[in-house]
Length: 424
Image 1 (cartoon, rainbow, N blue to C red):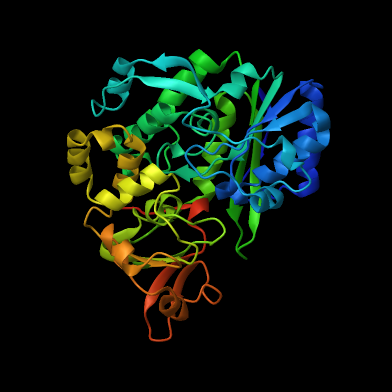
Image 2 (cartoon, rainbow, N blue to C red):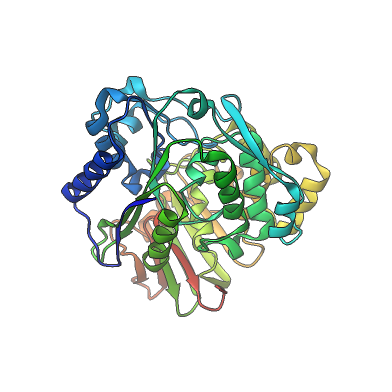
């Protein structure tokens, strides 16, 4: 059922309008005795899902007993992050998702189905796993707020991914990430219907119907002055809610370039991006826009590690970002990668495939560490002095010496591609 749908390329939903829509929708749903909210973590701070969660708490109060941020494999949120993203909500009702232990399996997507939709690239079944709170908590309403935006693993983020990956377990997360990588990141990015999405939809239809999940999906983009605007809000419990949000996101978050870009400079907000596990969005979201032999420069003042998960960090340091062919070979040979397919997928996603160069400018990692994983290195302060984020504007910029660059202040809210590389 679709409770509410509004959005366009020019829509600008105000805070008060959002509040009214949400409260009207909750009135339709009816008062509940026990509510669980599953919003994104701080890596999706700009999604406006924090505001939706705050409104849900304002409406339901004591009935909203638990908030479980959909961490997936990400690090737990800090107290300061929780207070900034969810102001006014008691810290005592937040729960930490432990993806290695707090899991129950609801069913299994068969291997034959996945083999078919992956075009014979992978041949394994997929467990539909969720945090056991969803099943054992006795909730009569589960709210899942989040942003629909182009995504490297599934094509378009959120909807049932927030449940089945965001609160998923080791095997489910690993296999879903590897499925996307094996199928091909550039065949996935920006597509609403991909093999990974098909798997999650199969699982939703077969194994999630008994759970009272309502999705609150936002579509967010910057206006011409660089201000974030909520261009769409879609509330429902089925695929239609997601499909409408994805259609709008494709219009406003997808930046189609008439010609490939020679040099791209991306800035990573230090509060949001502390690892290449997250910071490589600078690569994912720009790779189809960069010309052959072009360059990507990543200004990363908060960068302090490769993987947020310690096991994944070790694997990234050991193998580095190599080509798809090399990582697939290592995965076939090495049990440690076979047992951590998320890491293998991440290494594939972060590779330029020897087509363009990637130069990281980290705040806390050393030159040796950056070069050891097969990225180029440049000193952060030196590069920020040349490419000053406070002076650059999103899009094309011409430097004082005549150099032309394309600047992106936040890679997480968009996707950039040249027409020659993006094939429908």
